[in-house]
Amino acid sequence: MALIDPYFLAAGVTLFLLPVLFISSFLLRGFFWKFLKVKSSQGRLTLLRVYTLTRDYFAVGAINDDSIRWKDNKGQWRTTPITSKGLIYQAWGINCLDTDEATNCFFKRDGTGVSSNDSEKNDSLIQRALHKPSQEKTILIVILVIGILTLLVGFGGIFLLVQVQTAVNHLSQIGTVALKAGVA
Image (cartoon, rainbow, N blue to C red):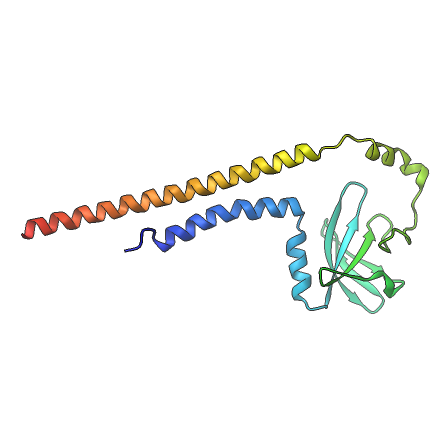
């Protein structure tokens, strides 16, 4: 008889992997699932990196003639004309595009092609971003603490499952020993 029942093992692995997948999906901001969707489409879909004032996010779009149709993070469908095929580049083995959400236009990897960029208006925002204190150590410490806690919870869950399975095995053996002793 196996030490651990396969159902207990599957439950333990699931309890361990769910927090890990949730945390990694949160940290990657949904990139992984969108990447898999574009990669599995075999060239029919394109991955868009959408730049906004507050944060960047990824979207999946389909190219139709000279435009691309994609859904933004608010759930609204947007159509953006593609002015040049040179804007599409290959990264990670898939087609990618960079777009600005506010102006609804594409730009190249070197930053050229962005229209409606008022440098005087955005100067204070840029200055604040440049002089903002670094939080890399804090973020690294938080990620390490979350990782260690996830490992401890996972190993604790597996240890608990092993203890429960051992207790069930001992209880089942007690009943069989009593029956054999009564027969003899």
